[in-house]
Length: 167
Image 1: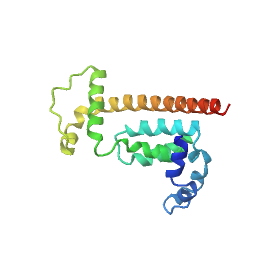
Image 2: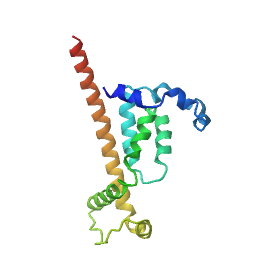
Image 3: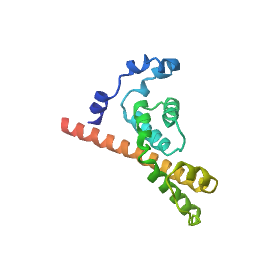
């Protein structure tokens, strides 16, 4: 079961609560739902992390932590999932989001030549921001819903099989 694997490889709640930088948050990290691996907490963490992975801002881990505390979902999973967007995956993911946004808005993209460098993106952001953010929102919301439902279904199937096996 993934639960045993996750418990084995994740840091303990106590080690995180006593960490010198995280101690500043005080009692916020003492909520058991932030650390327990149950169906509600894990599926919510998947939704939170997958949605925030598509938010094109720096410090996504901070956003995942704040929203994870607010929604009371598993923090390690939520924060870990934002790393789906990393320096290797960002260009194709964000380009796909931009193309989806163009398609939804019914635009052609002005036949712009796409270059993967920061100066090009900053110069053309005034043109691309609407379809780009729309595409990011659509994919983020879709992946959050799919992740949430998938974890709930997989967890339920596992429990049903475990109960049948016990009988």
